[in-house]
Length: 498
Image (tube, rainbow, N blue to C red; front, side, top):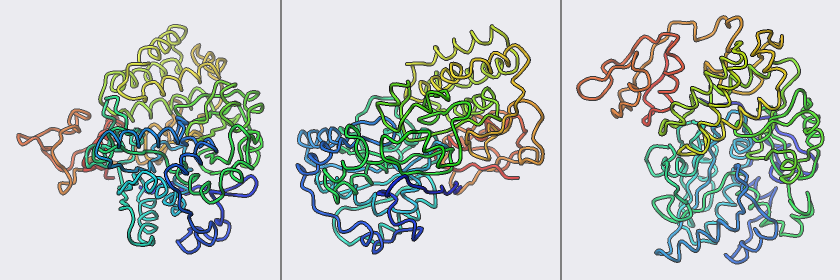
């Protein structure tokens, strides 16, 4: 499925989004006209540049890029000297579109950064993992326009799951395995693509490197804060991608996008933290400012909550979706997150003081025990919402409710039942009310059998280990499990047919 195409905006002169006010896609010639030729950078020069501009990963953790480069180079020296470069272009979270914007509109800038890193490391291969077919087409077209020779570049479309972007999940999928977290503490700098020491970073990080190599350290640092130079990309309200210099007030960015702090702002996406209206108005776009407010920029998602929607219901929608996005590999994810969502639903639907205690118990139960960070991130999201909107949750827990509908302003995939209002009047005219069937594509099915474990009331395996039927009636109550099975299927062989 092709997702939404983000609207683009800038505060001040654009860098990453330069040239896009004239054309919608920068081909190779236009890209070179806008940005200029890519200078050569020896390994030591690239390390010095990354250090001087304090380039950090823009995918969530904010890890220093130069340290990653050094770690991969050191691992290569201990082995046979071979390395690889991976671009993480997967955005499994519906609130993030900044990397999608870069790969859809200016893919050559991303390829430039990856090429610089590969040349500095002596890598022969660059692999780009994406999840959207339109993004895959854009990047593939850009690769075809590059000059022959140099590094081999391949583009791989992976399943669109929340956990696909986790390091071991991404490299697993690129290595023709299952794109799920390995559950082991594996450093990609030691063993990543094809088992080689691998430099893995996200799309914006490589694009920033492509800009910095052309500008040089001092001109790059002329924009933004002295302690955090340059610009950042933000996805606002799941729809608009904005390039802003660091240090700009968050309130100014919201105003540019036609909104305000409302009841609060979720910063960092669905593994992020809520800021109250006052904190959001006081915050600037910087790591230090957000840290002082108890938040992190993460992957750059900024989600204001308007005054006319129910915070408790919005939180529940996302908690249910996050539970369905489980990697399915450990108890805290498979059992703990659905139990957390169910307990939260009990609170929202009038569960009283006991429901509050049950939710906090579930939050504590999944923390620090997952095979990846998904249980931790989801539990922090719920706990942050409880702290940010105490009055609303109190009103729901004790029966009166807040009086506002759930408008679904926190973006979720449109076809996911979690996007429907979790309580109150049922939606009408939706696909979920139509007659549906769960269909197996025999040209893809490889008999993994995971689907039968997830929807045992619908799918039954035959003696050969494959589904006994190619098309099965799908009861409405089983639709959430069926969607989970579709996302979990390693061969992408399942679909819902109306």
